[in-house]
Length: 239
Length: 384
Image 1: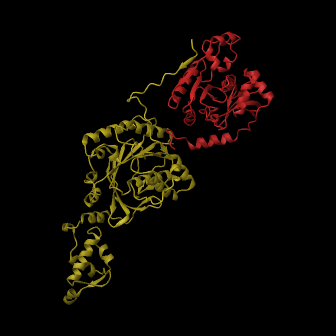
Image 2: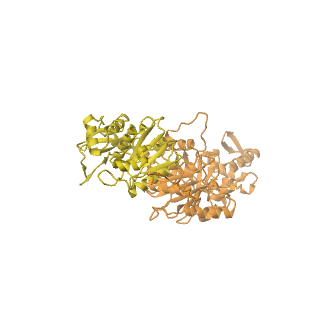
């Protein structure tokens, strides 16, 4: 199969071994979903859709009950605490931990792409992934589209995952910061080989209800009603 | 202002800025799993190689077609990776170097065959080292894959860069064959251009501080016994290279492989050039194709080999044995043909001695009393 840069079998074996040590991922309970809704401001209907697609799970990670974003490929998984607190990590704090052995280049959700999904919203990070599912539900597009997310702005898309995007309309929900814009451009360049056109949705200049600027799709869910009225693109985030 | 923005298409890179992809790199395990289709006969095992120094210099292996130059080079790599201290009588270093083979000469099945053979003489640890230290560039597509310079210079360089990043130590790169590297091996301009491009391919590599890649080029030699004999002679070694002698002139070391007359498992390895040390003596090799092993033949006599190569049909001047000579050999107590031939070791070929024996029998000077056994014949007995 040769890919251009050889995949080191030793590293691959080690990653597989690490993934085999992951805890069992459980389907979230109603109280788990309520906790996530409260922390992230994402409607339960969207969370349920993510659960149905195998994207949202819960597990005990680093001794803390956590919500996990992953997909059926188990290429990548990221945990955030259900109590909304950060994880103690190497003497500091981290709001999210990517599980050991994860393939950071894998867009979580790519494993849930089905033939009927002609459109894909590509996000950055776990909260935006769930926010995307709320958009999917709200816009009545669950049957014809899906959502994927890169869990870091620095990673490029895995070539194997790129193939799953082939021929589909893709929109990238960029974070409104320099790394987010660079990541969007890089992902778009990668996708250019498998899709005809890639569109970005950018939140620059939008204001949340509390007056804070909108930096990402998750923030956009808390948008001021007037701003929502003025920006009709937000009525159809899903491509 | 719209929130939606179409990404501009990535600019088409200009040809000179395009980043060509390196050839795919395969590890040993890739070839283990290849299924050899029935009906395909994998032939062409033999050898080539030498003790590669750590210097980023060109080395040359010459040999006629199908003598086994590629296998010899692989045998060298395998021996070094296995931790052997010696290969064909040349000392081997033990550093953890990686080996990269870039060649358009052999297909994947041939690689599988050679690697399967090499692994037979390896323990588990050596097999693991082979997996981690040996890389074969997949130049298998006759249409799309070319190693010809200068067109493929960037692709070759990228391949080397990819391998440098993976190699646990300094790199030995084997390029096979020279005739595919250059567009015209007879044309001085083409050869000069190729050698210049080759330097650029290996210039300034990330690990080129103390230990840069050693580059071994496999090239075809001229065929014929004269050239075989010449390869064992210090002043005539360079003449055996086919085509333009540019690579020979640039090489720090040049080795030549030639067959041994009437011996399909033996080879003669001659160093025809060695800029960095004394010129090693030519040596006979005993080849074990079943394990891809090559060892020095302690009974090899270079003088005899040279005489055999020069004793061409019709070249009577090469015959140094008369009927009187063989009669004297018998008179001295040598009765068996093998003993008689051995008494002329280094002076004449087996065939020459046998011809002299036949003539002596025809004239009655000797009598063959049973196959391969001679006594003095009637003419000499009467005189006596």
